Length: 129
Image (cartoon, rainbow, N blue to C red; front, side):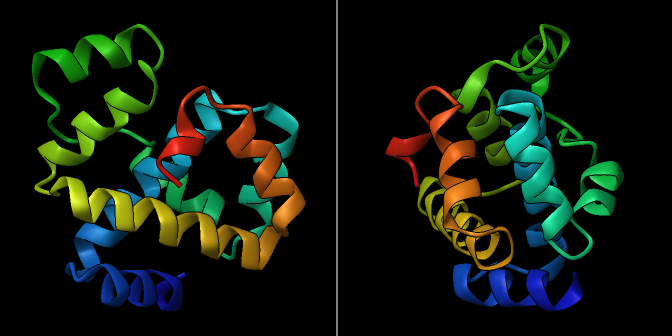
């Protein structure tokens, strides 16, 4: 997983610790929001993916009141994830780049068909990746 995090951090232009947190949050979001079977196959195929989701639990450390409310309601969709990532210090350009790199990496390990199924099962996600 360290190689994956480093590669994503370099491509997005953020530090490794932030990339690891953001990647864990994104995978955790997908685990909560996407088709159960497809996302389980995807996360299992990514080396260290399940551990990263467990470590970061897909949640922001902060997130403010809105992030806390969205989390308590069981998600909040793509926009709530964006809010959480911004609370970690990422800008919109970095979030978009991170989302694209995460999906590209997932396709590398889990295959295009599985990842496309995951993306299609989350309302609004396809416009960001």
